[in-house]
Image (cartoon, rainbow, N blue to C red; front, side, top):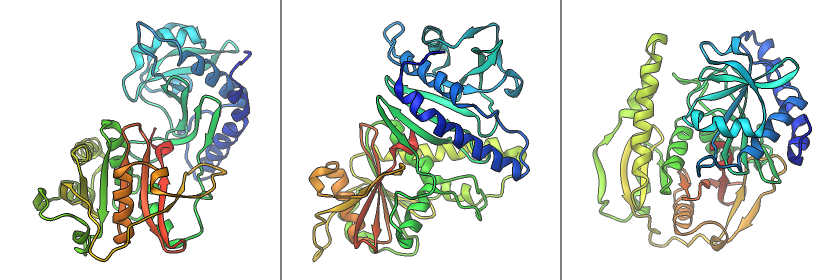
Length: 380
């Protein structure tokens, strides 16, 4: 199949190597239920067809498609077409309205030496290649984690001619242990906790981004009330006692047969808290996920200097940190979040923009300034 979207040809070998490495490592660790390994030609063809389909509206709506590369036998109980269809732009455009719901994938496999769409599935194996069409010209390559809840692991983001390869090893971040510890609270789950596949901050961030209103979430230490000096008093929407449903859920021991019910309860609690960030002002939770307040107004404490610059990075390969002025990154919400972290250096601030951008603000003692980490490529 001849491809006409140049980035598909450029990125396909890198993506193929990513899946080859991860699947091999998983096998070495004894994992058996793994997805097939896609080669570069297969990846290129799937990207090309999906990219051009993303620009073709059907009945006035642009398609939103998720494709998974696997055989029907690996999909559990899939919806099977009596006659598989060729993987073409036209076929994807026609089928898109049927698979717009979350977690539904069109299954793609090589049949009679040709890539074909064989049906749809909700179940896919670990490290399955998934390509998601977010909007016209914006595609995300991802894979299903072996363990985890909610988000897949993003591998590459393609936007028009722009290629962003996700930085798995943190090389885009400065070598600063204290900063890394703060950001890893967001980028990694706790392997020693009761739920090692879960990262609550990622779930909150994804839910904040999904509601589309923009918002700010401040994460403060459980054992300290110092953050109150950076919040205008009285707080109009404070909780008494603190809302601790999510805290209690994360402390529960869950049997395997109860896992689905527990995950549903976590989703509801996460969406409740994330929904509050749509209210004007900041939502405040502890690092143990207790909700303290929402709609809070950030202020600069007496005697504190205004934050006038910060360093910004993005978790993509080859990214270089840049020092920016407040007018160069975001608006009032970003400035107030940066000021809060400047004054409360043991806190995190998560900021969602209405346009989908998402930034984590943390204090970097090595750089002696606020560090803004743009993470929307991880949340698509």
